[in-house]
Amino acid sequence: MEGLSFVGPNTIKSGWTTVRITNDGGMTHHGLLYRLPEGVTAEMLDEQLVRPIQASLTASIEGDIEKATRIASTFPGWMGDIEYLGGPGMMSNGVTGEATMYLEPGNYIVECYVKSDGVQHNYNPVPGERGMVLPLTVLPEAGGMEEPDSNVTLSVSNAGYEIIDGAFVIGENSVRINFDEQQLYNNFVGHDAHIFRIDPDTDVEAAARWPDFFPVDGQQTPAPAKFVGGIHDMPEGSTAYFKVDLEEGEYGIVAEIPDAKAKGLFARIEVTNG
Image (tube, rainbow, N blue to C red):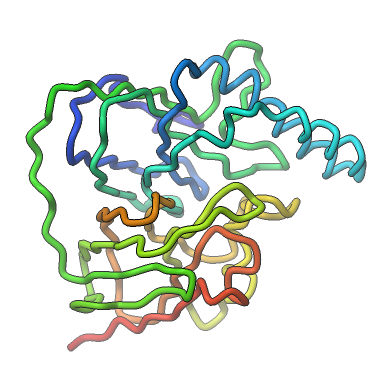
């Protein structure tokens, strides 16, 4: 990262791929990875989706819900054909987020849409200039990376999270995550996993609500807790990996969906010394 920009290659080989983001940007960020529909370019994404979403958000902040709704009705039809394929989850300043997914050839985007003062990080007010959006082309040539190892396996379904093998430990964790069930919610995303530390003064309710983008204060910096990583949503049946560095103590895992805690997409984990 450099300021509010991702820095990385624009072309990579296909197969198992690690996306690593070192967050030294002074605030919470993340890196949603998705494949663009055939024929859709990064420029079209910016003009037809990112900018209208920001305009709708601004109208909502100003209290003009009718205008916000009218703008939202102009979102392009191809929006529903975007395929979410993981990417590093929410990470506070000083945290390195890392996610490993199996990527097929195609044109992808890595983006962060956390808000600062009501403005999404993927939005740049300068016409023709992008914010935290990195176009990425995955080539047909295979990269040859092997599937990672893991020390804990986590499943996510409509019922919530379940540790089905191993355990979270103090230090570095390589987490295998199985997306056993998936569904799209009205904020346009599905089941994923973002981990935050629960300290004695952490407002757990606020931290569990924060990842939902659609409320005006959703993903608005500063975050109410220290996020240490995770992974964005992927299609049902997918398997991917992410790394988190944990200290002794309690953590929360939450999905970026409306009312995640009420829907069961929140869990506490205890990391102990033995």
